[in-house]
Image (tube, rainbow, N blue to C red; front, side, top):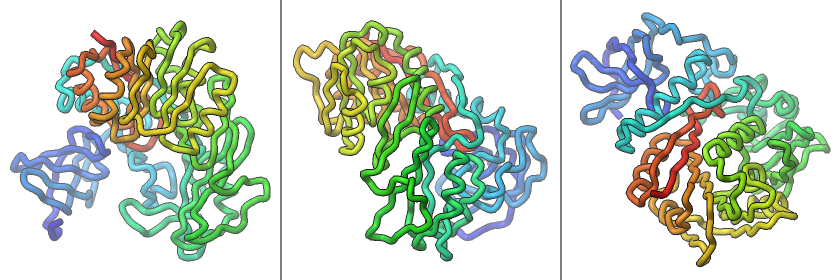
Length: 397
């Protein structure tokens, strides 16, 4: 980190992975501009400088891009760090995300001609059925400011499901204690989870299920899912449904597949909703809570759920897996996950990625092990943020 220097003027050229805009200064050096939009002309102040690049904050927008808008949420205007792309028009967000994925596949994956399609998006308001709040100094539910431990009130959050807002307004939280809230669109059930060793929460309705063992039920693509408070779930059922549809488009073979692997299975979203009812399903998941949900959600199916790290897992001899689905964490499959996937010898693999650079790395690794990239679909499950979800088809050659 360096001391602030005099402001200079740059013109952001494109958005990059991580959400910043890339520009060049008068000397041709790369500048990463927080809050920049391609087409802007902005006065900036450098806050970090390393080698041949620097990072800067905007002091003033001199000329606004046609895609620049006033952040529509009052909380973001007050500095909330939750929606880092609210200053970009909604219509421009998914195309920008597609460009970021294309750039990652080209630069990191060395795939300049990779097939890439623009998929769908969830509604840009009220789509988040899971949020995490923190107690402010007065015990009110709050969000962290952008890159800060300071807070802004969570009330009236634009992207939170409306049912969570009344909970947020009523609750009181030990300062600095983090609380995760989740609501079911299908049933209206609400869960709240926090670490009781770090503090407590008051003001919650008696109908709210509390603690790690709490749970609710959600419906996705006509299937009912048990989701424990400690288990991961997508940003909402609309996002989950878009993913299921994209996975099925990526692997039409799922309709008649006799054996399907669901790696990093979570609560069994793809094992249940993306497979045919007669398929045998093998599910691998590391979270104890999610494994319990997955087993419950696959009850009555020909299925086996194993708890453990997928990177250390290997298929049984003769498993004859016909389609493999993998939905790893943001870091991607990496070498261990790729090794496990390759060991299945599955003819078709579908990779769900939530980071474009990780996708590109995984695509390159899979390519070295005989799996050809046959198309990526980019989805927007987190409008007003730089996050992008990708569903990619690979075929063994």
